[in-house]
Amino acid sequence: MDMRWSLNELYTSYDSDEFQKDLKRCDEEIEKIIKWAQVKLTDKNPAQTIEEYIKMSQEFGHIFSRLYNYLSLILSVDVNDNKALNYLEKLEDKSTKLTKPQVEFQRWLKGIDNIADIISSSPILKEHEFFIRENQEKSQYLLSTQEEIIISKMKTTGSMAWAKLQENLISNHTVEITIDGTEKSLPLPVVRNMANEKDASLRKNAYQAELKSYEKIAKSSAACLNGIKGEVITLCKLRGYKSPLDKTLEDSRLDRQTLEAMLEAMKESLPYFRKYLRKKAEILGHKNGLPFYDLFAPVGNADMKFTYDKAREFIVKNFKSFSPKLSNFVDNAFEKRWIDAEPRKGKQSGAFCANLHCIGQSRIMTNFTGSFSDVTTLAHELGHAYHGHCLISESYLNSDYPMPLAETASIFNETIITNAALKEASKEEAISILENSLQGSTQVIVDILSRYIFETELFKRREESSLSVEELKEIMLDAQRQTYSDGLDENYLHPYMWVCKPHYYYADCNFYNFPYAFGELFAKGLYAEYVKRGKSFVEEYDNLLKVTGKMKVRDVALIMGIDIHSIDFWRSSLNVIKEDIEKFISLV
Image (cartoon, rainbow, N blue to C red; front, side):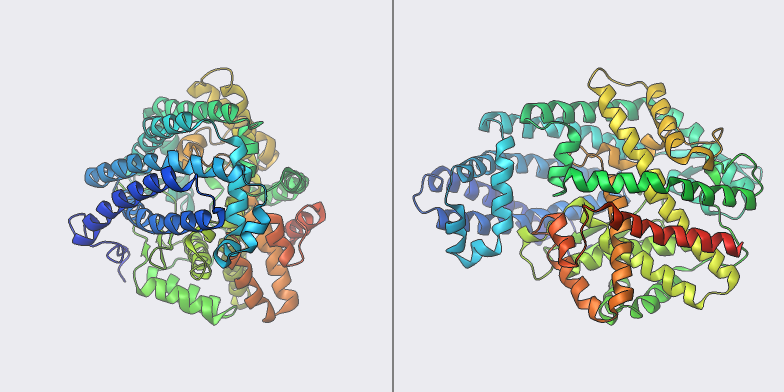
């Protein structure tokens, strides 16, 4: 089966008539919106004005997102495609022209007092009530129109340029490693994936080679990180946010009470995860906790290697136990080549899913090497794609869901795969499957908490001055010690996690860590509801995913009768993982 995706459904090439036509249309739509704002924002018919703005925003959004995603997807698998990079930079520059009319619309909207009456007067406005009210709320953080225009333009040569540099550094980064007496220069994703290998000496060798290799790009990465976080701090202060975290919470449609309840429950659960890590260390012959290079080491004697074809069969079969609709959707994604799974030089490490609302499809990037972890990663990303599928009937403006809910369908998919696989597993297979699941949960609870602690401290120190490579390493090590404690061998931690994780370099998505924990625990809570309710849950689940783009996170949860303000909900979700830990320990 072809392990590279097809982008022809977006465009066949840069030179295609459709691509060039949309570039021109993009310019035309921008000019149209600019001219409209100059005239209509003084109009005495606010209902009609808002309707027109919504229609124009959706038209432009479809064109722009189609172009932007096409170029971004090309660059994700070939960072050296300079033509794509050039077009992307031009597109980003074009989008800054819309800053003025967007700011002016938000400011105009802020001045409307009878918004409830206006919304109730139109079906289109009722459909987009959340979009309208959210824009009104965010208007309080606006600067002057001229300031907003300057910031928008400066970001393209500021944080966005820093982020591109970091992406280029990591995507082209190679690791010098000696394997079986032969010196090799391998792409970073290939070496990082060696953490899943059965050969213990290879895992350790890869870890040491990886850490040493970062010395080549650590100073450049630190410059990128300092530049991006410095810009974030400056803009948050200018706009009146209390902190970057407060801005993230607002953007995430999440309240601090929910975050604090979840974090407190996570901290309470750490001793259980350390118990699992110490047990795994014992199994692998370590006495001082688990070294970082064995975090992903396979445990058990089951042969859990998969070909790409076998992974497809396994995922499609097990999804069918939950929903034929989900199973058929996923099978179609493989069949229509929505997935790029082949590791290669110039390709980004990790995995992601891009939902393409403009064509009613998705594209998934992974680096598949055949481990069971790679199978669950595929299932995870296909969950994002299914989430996008459930939003197809929603308007473009109602399809943008916040970060915490972004991980719901993906983690739910992983839970389906793990639980379905366990039902048919032998004892050795059950050990491998459980261990893989606990690996993932440990990353999403323990490691994510360490990343949250790291980023909190990073922002605190960056307010005073730029941080050196040594300071960044020190903060990362301290964060890992706080969360992993004696679960890991303190002599073998990972001081460069801030280099290889791209989320730290997203200027508009700070603290892109706690949403993963939210997704893990919210999804496990939803799965528990599925076990209680049975098949009737499936339609409710699809409906929940459908409204994620037009409600606050707490309101989405309340649809299923879940109160995310309650620490007991988070504890109950963590109890599911604790039970898996006890089950794993009893089996080995």
